[in-house]
Image (cartoon, rainbow, N blue to C red; front, side, top):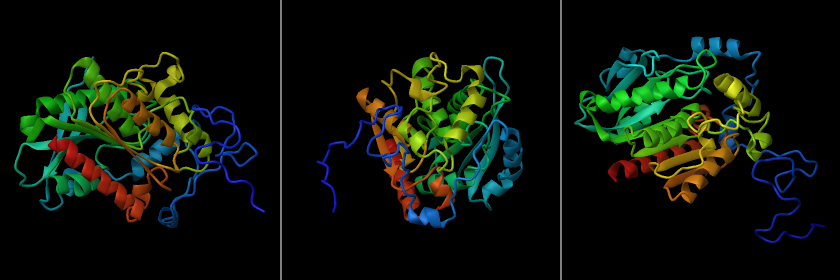
Amino acid sequence: MAGPVPHPGRTEGRVVNGDGGGRAGVNDDGGGRAVPPAVDAEVRAAGVAAGDPLTPENLADRQARDAAARPRPGVAELRDGGRFEVAELVAPGLGGGPEVRLVSARPAGAGGPLPLLYYLHGGGMVMGNAWSVLPRLLRELAEPLGLAVVSAEYRLAPAAPYPAAVEDCWAGLLAVAARAAELGADPGRIVVGGKSAGGGLAAALALLARDRGGPVPVGQLLLSPMLDDRDRTFSTRQLAGHDTWDRTSNATAWRAVLGERYGAADLPPYAAPARATDLTGLPPAYLEVGSAETFRDEAVAYADAIWRAGGAAELHVWPGACHGFDTYAPEAAVSRDARDARLRWLRRVLRS
């Protein structure tokens, strides 16, 4: 016979605390083990699997394999037979840092000045490149919205630990705003955005723009953002060993980025935006995350913190989506819905 039905809104068992620390609740299986949410059937059918996590021992090998295998399309390929105008630029480094390479692209023949998406690639701040993300960005966002895109090639850890990546991204943003006319872009309609590590860097840029008085973005597009180095949320435990980017991989990447500052109490929010205690005065944010991914709870908490500070945030938690779901299963219904939601938000924020 079935047991009593819990009263709606009442938690059965012990309370789940906000930092995921040690107390069981409705998300546990009764033995203290967190039960992960089911992955969407179409995403699962695409063959998505957790795979071997990133570890300090395999990091160098994984970086080498990624650099060799990840697409790095050249300018001619990105132009796609004249469909897009593409150019590579160089931004001066800041504070003695090296020059930063940028890739600029826009729909061919589009009148200007166009709104601009300043985009930062993913890869845990230890992998990835500025070129590989552009074909999808141009096809899915730039063309339907009449949008210019600039992708930044920031330095990777551990060879270049914090603050190298965020300062590179900041240098690129300053250069893009200063050269907006040359790029056919409107400096008053810049959105900063990125996925995973790039989403965290975009959030950091929004904080830097506020605090340093730099170019003010009109929005921040944060896709499955990597925001918190502390790995204390419930979802980091719940998805350990299950997500495509799990707790072990995340800790490995954060340690590479932060070095001896990993877990430090005084870590600045520009290193890990979830550390921010003041989220006032930020541009409107779009946050999306999957219900079955490691970053779920930190993205939800960041949106909530923006609301509590009186700011604007649109949050989507896609059911059954793992980290990188729309890349692994682009034709899944949940992936199509996510792309549509991003487009709608960008249209609204660029018209306001």
